[in-house]
Each structure stands twice: as C-alpha cells, then as structure tokens.
Amino acid sequence: MTDTADQFDPPEVDDTEVGDPAAAASSGDSANASPEQTAEPEPDDDQDDNPNRREARYRLQLREVQAERDQLRGTVEALQRAEVERIAGQQLQKPQAIWAADVKLAGLLDEDGRVDPAKVTEAADVASQALGLAPVRRAPRPDRSQGRDRTAPVGDAWEQAFKG
Image 1: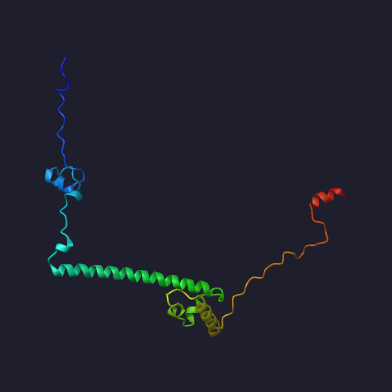
Image 2: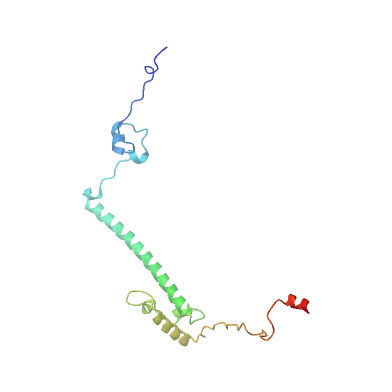
C-alpha cells in the first residue's frame, strides 16, 4: 500500500490580501484581478501641479453647485406657491387667480422665508375685489333631523306590522 500524503501536492498559496490592488499588481497575477484593480490610480488632486487644470476643476465644481442650487431654489419656490394657493383656496374658487392680481411671492413670505397665512389671506381678499371674484361658497350642511317624525315609535317596521 502506498502513502497518499506523498502523492498530494498542495498548490502554492499567495500571501497577498484578497482585494488589495497594489499587492495583486505586484504579485504579477493580473489574470485574476478585476478591471478596477488593474486601472492606474489617479493622481491625487492636491498633487496636481498644473494651476490651469486645478482652476478648471474648481470652475466645474462651481457650475455643478450653482446648477444644484438653482434646481433647489425652483423646488422651494414651487412648494411655496403651492402653499399660497392652498391657503388662498379657502377664500377663492380658483386659487391660481391670486397670481393674476399681480401678487408677488416675495410679498407673501415672512422674514424666515416661510409663507405667512395672514399675508396670503389679505392678498386673496385684494385679488377677489380687484378681479371681481365671487367668494368660495360652502356646501350647506344637511339637517339630519328633517323628515323624521319624533312622535312615532322607533323600532323595526316588520316587527310592528306582524304585532298588529
């Protein structure tokens, strides 16, 4: 009988860490490395000696930040207009009419930039008078006691029909 331990040769084990691109590149095993690991590392931005390139990067960042700021400003303005129309809708049948009366959004905001309900109510009154708009009519509340005879006994009509 032969010894099986002599026939088994274990593969050589690489001591480099898995996922370490520098170690994988230095070991020469580029077939198993992912494309992200084999890519050249980008030079650090602080080490860039070309001032024109650095300024161009700053200009690009500035444009991106300005575009994001403008988008957020538009979103906030749309939300403020929606809130103004919601409040004006309590007095006007068509709340969008408040803008037809030359009301400016900035005039309806408080010091913190929030919509001031008192200013919106006042502007809705002015818009209603200036444009000749009818006030919002509330639906009448039904009187549920009408049509019911309080003297008749309350109960099951079928039961009373058979009792005679």
